[in-house]
Amino acid sequence: MKILELTDSFNLHREAVLVPLALGDVGGVTLLPDGRLRIVVPKNKPFEDWLMELRTQLAGMQLPSTQH
Image (tube, rainbow, N blue to C red; front, top):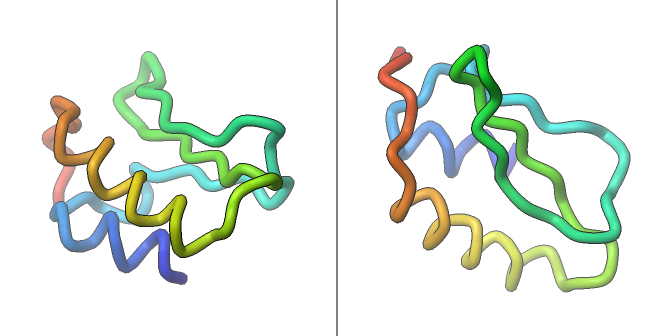
């Protein structure tokens, strides 16, 4: 929920955000060819620290125009 709340603050439609349930070795954000964002949570970093990094990363990206 915290990830979706964060992406909501960037006015991204929730259907434009994919968050796999499995944690990744390296977390990150990928802009998919269809314009959606794929956000992977890393398994080796405290979630709250990573969430702040995610906010910074999203702020620096050219985000898709899909909004709610």
